[in-house]
Length: 110
Image (cartoon, rainbow, N blue to C red):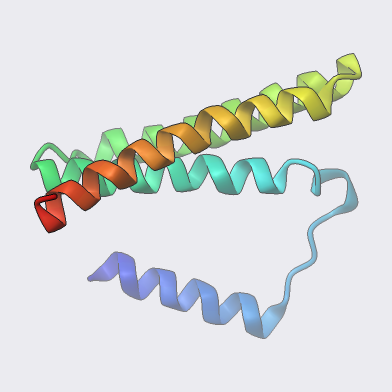
């Protein structure tokens, strides 16, 4: 319940203050969001499976975001940022859909 309340407060604060993302960080924001979503859906799946650990979730959340942004940053420095961004999105997208499928099977028993 606290997490949902925190999420709602964060959304409201985002709409009220409308923070700007610095121009240099804009390419990394979508990658960080997808990496964070991967951790969130993985945490939800673990919760439904009864194996959720908050420390593992926090480490997974932070490491997913940092590693994904790091890969894209490295790709930008090498001149292949678009290709590495696509690769990261594909891998994390597959993981997200795998977790969502497991959540669906758990919730709907189908």
